[in-house]
Structures are given as structure tokens and as C-alpha cells.
Image 1 (tube, one colour):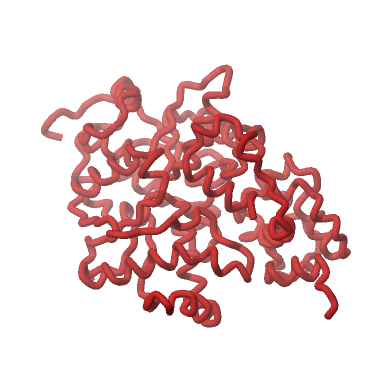
Image 2 (cartoon, one colour):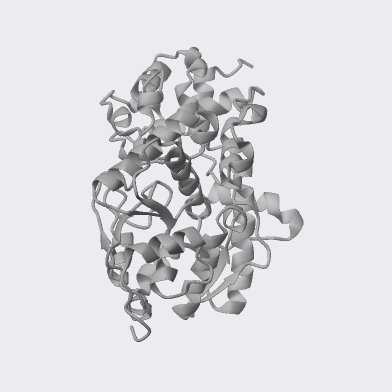
Length: 292
Length: 124
């Protein structure tokens, strides 16, 4: 297995609503000399994991993508399937976990797929971008071109990278993986109580007020802790946080951005950073210049 | 054949045992949405224990964000959030949808992820 090779599952939102998340992520991967290849074919993961024990059909989209990863991974010498969106990560990893632990479910799924001559051999490892970046922290350190002085970052994990604990990428009660990445980037981060609190997720479509209240609490909590940046890895969290931010009468001077936008900026990879984020960051930091 | 009761169905499709719950209130304490719920998470589990079929009328199960905070921390492994999904599904499988797309505020601004997740949770 080649350590730096990853197959990539995009999902819906990075292809439409979070373009700069995906683009800056790939700029960062390139700078870190990671070989990340998008699946030739992929299917909607379903976005939420079907929780009922008889809801097998809800897992099928995820299974198809896992099979595709198994096939393509053989040629690329990797079994790692990388996601940016933690909702995709959560569904794909939970489906994978379920099939590994429940032979009856696996057989049931196999029966669905038999007509298409497809099978799944459980070999794929689903990984989230945070885990990959954590692994290559030494490379991140070397790739940093700008000093992060003046930035105070609040890490926001939300739910899906961490819960349920069986599939989480870090301690679900007290994760530190994002903080370690910030240390490699040389930026200061703050501690605040809401980094693993739910943003409101899909409830923003059903009960907008409730989701706005939750996301507002996270933003204000981060701001009160001294942060001027709130960093997320999730397009749904990003949407809810922006919804909350835009609904505030007195907007605190804090910017909500994707982790890879911050990374690209600090690594001098500016081309895909949205202009408003670039100018916000420009106005807050000092430059280390061309020689690093 | 005797028709399966609503409560039996909730227990079967959740794969969880609500009778293990000793009402400690952990789920309600950690629930990010509890303040917006008409009936609190531990109370819903209690109503299921009592065999109350009117749990289907509780709005709180639709305010649950499936964040897994209660499921991860339940000391009896009851998984309240899983039981709430089962309660939602009993309604959805009867063809009762909870989402009126025409009533969604600024639907064009919502990311696909929000619409897909909401469709999965609020429609059958």
C-alpha cells in the first residue's frame, strides 16, 4: 500500500455549495505531495446514516461507492477512501463498520448486488481529511509560507467526524486533531465549550429558529473565547453557521471559513481562496515573505 | 395474525431496548435540541416504556438532529436517538411526511446537503 495514495469521494456539497473547500483542499494536497484521485464513479452517500435495523436499502448508495473504491484502489495500491465532507465520511464509515460486524446485513446487501455482478470484500478504509492532514503534519510545517500572527482560531468539529464514538476520528469528548494541525500551521487557537456541539444540522430546514439558536451559540462562544476565525470542515455546519451569522443584528468580527481555506492561505496557495476570506486574512496577519 | 403494535414496531426497527432505561436524564442533559423539544428525550423513552402509542404525535422527535450525543453517552446503551428515528419512521412509513418543500424558507440558498438530509429525515 502506498502511504500517500488516496481515492477521493466528493459528495454533493463540495461539488456545488463548497467549491472553495474542495479546490483549496486539492491545492493543499498537491503542496503536501499527496496523490488524491477522485473516484471515476460515485453515488450519493445518503448524507445521513439510516438508523433503523431494517433500513438496509438506505445503505446501498454508500456500498456502491465502497465497491467502486475497492476496484479502483487495487490499481492504485491504496485501500483508503478520503472524504472532505464529514457527513459523507460518517455515512460511508458507518456502513462499512456495520457490514464488517453484521454478516447477516452483508449477505442481505450482497443479495441486492448480485444481479449487477457486484460484490464487496470489506477492504476499504474510510478516512476523513483531518486524519490525513494529521498524518502529514511534518510536511505541513515545512509548507507554511505565511505567519499566522494575529489569527486566533476556534476549531469547530461538529458531530459527524466524532460520533458515534465507534467510527469517530478522535476522542469524541475532547478532540485535539484540529488543534494539532493548527500547531503545525503556527496559528494560535482558543478553547471554548462548543467545538463538538451540534450546529442544528438538517433541522434548519424544519425548525430554522432552533438551528439558528444553536449555531449562534457556537459563534458567540468562539468569539467570547477571543477567536477571530471559526474553522469548520463541514458544508452543512458552514451553511448553518452562516445562516446564524447573517441573522445576527450585532455581528461579531469573526469569520467562518473552511480549514483548507486557512491552510491554503498560510501555505501561500491563494488562487482558490474566496476574495472576502483572502482580504479578511490579509488584514489580520503579518507576512513572512518569500523565503519563509 | 395479530397486528404488531406501534410500540413493538418501534422496539423492533430500532433494535434497542427502551426498558433498560432507568431515567437518569443523561440524554436530555446532553441533547443540543432539548430546549426546543415539547417532550424531553428521557421522557419520550419513558412514554415508550409505558406503551404510549401517542409518542407518534410528539414534535420533539423531528427536532432531534441525530447528532448522536445521547447515543454515545447513554449509560444503559438504550440509544434514545435511535429510538426517535424508529418513532419517525413509523409515521413516515404511514405516508405522513413532515416536510413541505414549498414552505422551506430560502430553499434556493440551502446547500444540497441540507435538502438531501432533510428529505431523508422528514419524508418517507
